Image (cartoon, rainbow, N blue to C red; front, top):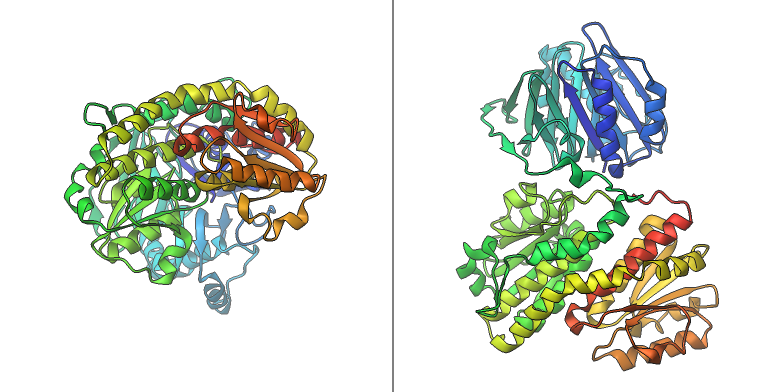
Length: 598
């Protein structure tokens, strides 16, 4: 993913664009660039590295430009370099653009354009689109016509922002499969891949839908479909405050978001627990409740952290509702011709609601007649708009690229969904009641867990020089082990793997020695004694044991000094508490190693 931002108005665009890029740097930090246009020329300034590097290059120059686009890159095609950074331009230098997405047929298009005489300077797929517009403009002499023709020639996903000397008082944009929003100010317009980039300047937002083209002037916007028919769009008011996307005194967004989890879990359950009827109240599912009752199979789909949450959701749904449930990688789902019908209930899980693979999986499910529901955090995101219903997380903006608070909120929401489904089937009043009562206590128990942060930091300092790590859990905590491993490698760049603890002896055990941190999730549940046997196996091979266990569990202290205690809760709810130390462990390890945490 990459971040794009654009501005057209009466203010100096440079400062607004740089400020926007800083808010989008979590989307990519390989390189950054900016293109600004006046009636006479296009200025492109770009460089490898962080947004601050670009900001230093610009310094106090280019103060008279009122129109511009900017980009922060996460490299796909072509290594991180100045040449491969965006904006990319055409042969003449009359067109500049920035791109978030991937052009899948770029190789064949590049050969076609080279045969037409076009000269390429970068290794990127993005540059193709600039040359396509150039080529098509030669025959159409109209920018929107040239853009539409170019859109029809590319295969893949994209959000483009484009400026041109042919029409220097406009910004053009188009989208397919990548997020893009428009912001309306007073005599100024904005565009961005994320609301965080422009919320400082406006809360009036227009969402760009699939294969739409946008023309912005300083005081107007116009939308067209790919057939060039005009589309009427509504402005929506975003109820977000700038303080929600600031660090709030924390050194990193990730740490702030870890510490927000008592509140975000509370937000996820607020108004959704009906103790009088021992049930969950989920209004976003009400309109489909009769069809939900008829479903005899459930599929949960997501990517990365959301996929791990789905694995936990499978335990919940099958335990409470006794409905066969499968978990699918969204990135693979549509490519294997999945078996779906009107009695299959599909849930698509995404923090942003804009995960391209998850959106594609959602559309495949709808094409095959499945009831498609969403679990996401961002109101009016693509998944929220395209699903048949669903549940919001209410976790607030998650800026850190390593998801933390969204994960625990996803688990919480999946738990509530499983209770609702269970009560539609055979889940008893009494069992449901006991679980809902304990769910209400979890924000306090997460808060108690955060009090062990300094202990976790000490342990992180001990493992910071490690090259590899293994995370082990059993039952509902096996997905927590996967999530712990993902977090460690995602932000500290230590190779880490998560396994079911019983599978350790089928291969990974050969890797364990005194230099290998092995992190066990060993809170008390029906598999507690079995995981102790697994701990014994690691101890026998001198593995560097780190054990997450319940407070006052002295039985495990004989195995290691690296004990991380957590409050006791019901076994099925333990993932929400147990993942907190793993998030802190990965964060503290990354900081110790000098990594860019966010």
